[in-house]
Image (tube, rainbow, N blue to C red; front, top):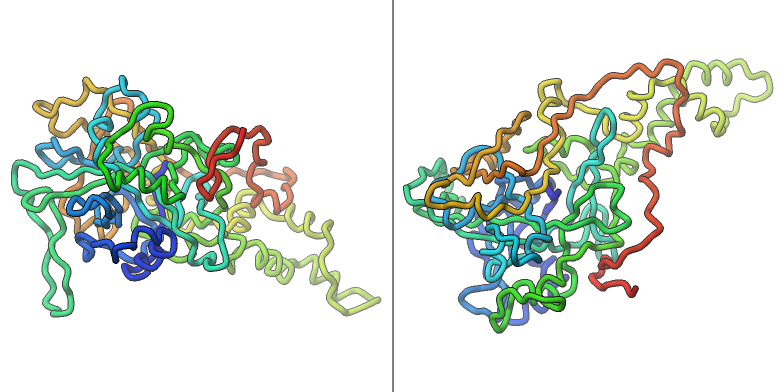
Amino acid sequence: MCGRYALALSNEELYDGLEARLPRLFENGRPRWEREQDNRGGNYNVAPRQRAPVIRRDPEDGERGMIETMQWGLVPHWSKHPPTGPLNTINARSEGLLDASSGGMWHALKGYKRCIIPAQGYYEWLKRPSTKIPHFTRLPLDKSTTIDNPPLLFFAGLYDIVKYIEPVQSKFIPSEDPNDKRQAYPTGNPIPLSTYTILTTVPSPDLKWLHDRMPVILSEWQDIYDWLDLGEVKGWIEGKDGTGRLLNSTEGLDCYPVPTEVGKIGNNSPTFIQPVSERKDGIKSFFSKQQQSSPGKVKKEETSPISTKKQQPSQEDESSLIRDVKKEDMKEEAEGIKSKISQKDEEKGLGDDSNAPNPIESEIKPEVNDNIGKRKREDGEEKSQEDDEAEEKPTLKRGTGGHQTKVIRKNVDEGDKEQPAITNFFKSPSQTKTQTPSKTASGRKKKR
């Protein structure tokens, strides 16, 4: 966590959303946007190595923030050559930043290279015995937002800018269209490459059932102002009331199952942020289709001597209907998670939910270890068009790094085993009653 998120806004829509959520960011006019042309608008499935907007302190005016399009997956500035293979620096554990004695490369960045990453929500995969079910987590809707256009939230992150010692060839081919203003992507040499990571923390009590990590989310302007270090330069402040006080979990977020297609990098659809229960192939239409196609039901209606009027199915009828369908097929179709990918695709897994650990200081030797290690990935990844256009494929790895889990769906014959109620498939594990101090969705901390 966090391995995927959504930001399906055009550049103008993002400006509007930022002004609505962070009006004080616009007190002196629109923040400037460096490499605005690199942003891929309308992306419901932002994945590692893709480029996305990031907000940081403007070096030309420390009182203001600026936007820069960066590549997801941090490459430290001391790297001499582009790392190869899969990334595991898309996340950084916030606990490591709080321990000044822990060492590691995050401590070299936390002082003056902090940023926030705007998003409409993030994806996480709930592990089940035979599958992983993607869930979308976002801020609650308000009067000005909808399911299709949820409010912006902001991840706390770190960034860095690298320039390799040798030129890196760009694969960008300029268009002959005079209206196409795109330029070659930064490669790290000759154009410096900006990259970022998202900080994670322990989950809030109401999201522990989903995963053991969640991103650090900042909501209040003062928190964002302090994290970006706007105004007077303060750097990282140690202590109880220092910068680390901002790195907490957030309560009160909305979370629900979404289609499995989001697990494949390169897929992009507005349905990825919609609850499966609200889709046309969700639970409501499922019962309607089953009632129309059920032979037992049709026979009963045709032979009824009392009335020919169609009756609504009772709870008993629904339970009987459910038992007539095999558990695995029923579960997938009702949840809207029935896989539409091939066996080859299944072996690639359903998503990257790994966490990047804090590097051990002894492992970072820029003079010797240029690539910061390599981690072999078993399942591989499907590349998007954005990935094909990217010139570099960085990876930073540790021997104790995050993990990628190969997921292969199994067909289990349940025989005559009774099928649980259909509503159970949409019911998330019950929320924990015991509450611990954490932020609410609005950014305020609960009183003990």
